[in-house]
Length: 575
Image (cartoon, rainbow, N blue to C red; front, top):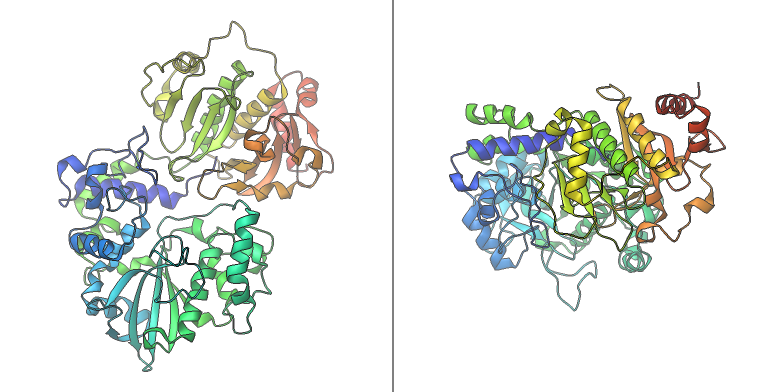
């Protein structure tokens, strides 16, 4: 299970509590709603941290709403997952939080001085655009990075943008252009390599990186690793800042990137992938500072700086702050009760249910880890071979759902079921109901054990050993779902050199042609300790030269799954 960071869980609860308690929303905007993604379609699950689509623009706070909608419309700036020309309906949108924090600064330079003066030495603010002291989705007047498609660039889409920008005079009398990048709950997984697109990126940015005056030391990290987010975005923005400084844009003597990130979002700082980046620093911030030839051109600040009504507003502080109104404090407590901060129970429960369902239907089902909804959901998805029908989603960030029957018939009524209900239910009775709703015939007897079903059962049993443990176990796929945010191969597989090259190659039955979907990696305390391949029923540790035949071990231990599980942990711990 790709664990939802505690910070994200907490912010979802905070947003839900604000939504329930604030006087700035009408009653009809306070009901749970499905998340509407980039394609414009909403899912079946409704969330307290999403607004109904028809009220999405109310995510913008009253003091910035109309001015922001007008400005974005005038400049042709698209909203992330926008609805009807306005913002998306997810209350954790970083773009919306940025506009809510900085929107009043467009016409009020004193707020810029209050917020940024102590950080970057602002003493005076100058117009960046006619009638504006601050602007959004800034890209510069010229196409410095040669990114225009057909000679046209769009602010905030398909070219390097920063979330906001302003021009100021610093305490030393210098004129400086400040480029602001705003993050909230973002985190990044391993990228999917695309050779054709990467060639375009190398042609576009390679010369700027290799130039003698490049702001980035490209000898410390190869270009391939700089393509991994969030380093890729940081690279492009720093290159833009450098070119703007060379051009003295807006009369600036310097151009500096200010990166805004909540201190609590450790998942962002841990988004380091590849071989060399984690050796350069322990966090994204450390790595980036060491890659910069002029570290003072990049400043990272905590977004808590904006929890000041003299900088933003009372409503902003109440929505995003740690000292909410009494009504929201009570709502936060209720909302947090709906989330599982300790994910170990959901890890074990979801794998138990998935493994038992596939065990009973090995010919027509298998397990895939997916993150639909732009990464908002975290699902063990039971599906059939390619070209067949049937989808059951065990959403660890939501509910248990039947999306499509396996027999091709119209789905029976199955209300999305919470994990509390599953954990209270009789396991056999629940499984029978789920089978009927999914169009899977109840077997007269459980089919014989085979490598795939044994692999799933072993993973479920291993997850169960860590329930409520201070040493959590997480089960990750060998291939992150390719339609997901941050999809691609899981580089944790590289920790297991004993996996034969023949198994790493594509096989005819591989989902979407990716071998990684056959593999699972078990991490304890975020360290990979076991890897599994489900078709052959094999397991590996990082330290042994040979694999472990699960079927052989299962037979040796007289089909005692608990003994098999404990033996695997003993081998993994090398004791």
